[in-house]
Amino acid sequence: MFYIHSISSISHQLSFQSDGFSEKLFVLDDTSSLEVPDFKDILPPTALRRLSPILKISLTTALECRNKKEFDAIVVGTALGCLQDTEKFLNTIRTSTSETLSPTAFIQSTHNTIGGQISLFLKNHAYNMTHTQNALSFEIALIDAITLLKEGNNNVLVGAADEKIELLEKLRNSIIRSKYPLTSLATFFNLKNDQIENGIVIKDVTVNLNSTIQLGDFIDSFLEKNGIQFNEILKVYHSDCEFINGENTMNYLPYTGLNYSASALATHMAYDELSHNGKGLILIVNNICNNDFGLTLIEKC
Image (spheres, rainbow, N blue to C red):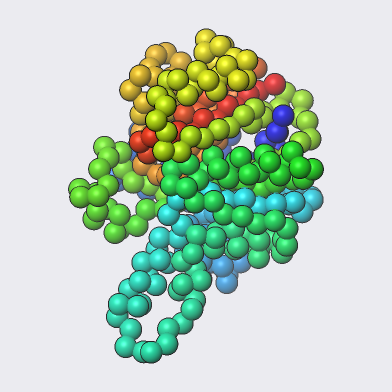
């Protein structure tokens, strides 16, 4: 069992430091904005000046998960990385007339900048890994975190973050086709082996990349592996999966928006819902990208 000891999200929902937010979800639209805290109360002035929005929300949510012990590992999932800084870097290349360019824009644009900034701020020199596998980046990061716990580590920070920028909005009608608004979000949580009475655990997580198997068969196989019948599940969160419907199911994309880290926020929603209920299981289905499936089973013991 891998226990969630703390969890934090910044999103377009009122999810930051808001116990019970899963009961107050609202459908997002193109006018919905990122609900951010006052960073001045959390981050130092130097970070406020130089960090991009995705780094601010990632660092803030990561700091919310700190405990008395140093993290044994920091694991991050991100599909697109720091897009705003990437765009700045590419524009600098395009417009510069100098033979040499400052490396700052490039350094801040790489995918592992998020994990690096968290590590620098916490002065943490432990294992630090970033996974980027499109919409399954969070699930791969979670698998890595669980593997680390199985190997003897006991205090892992794991999470995911992705952001929208204006350029993505311009591409919506040509490359990005979705009925859901584009969003930014960051979700991090502290995963441990230490047991919590009535605690909430990640029971299992799996992925299937470039799959030829049908999603329904993949879910059945996953539940069978865990010795669970479908009717034993309290609720199924899914990313607009047509064949999953019913009273105890929820399409989370209207509430997370289109974001490749949406399943991380869905995990926080499930955690929040379970924390206010009795024992139960919630299955999170991530099929945002065709033929790429991610399944996360979360349980309140």
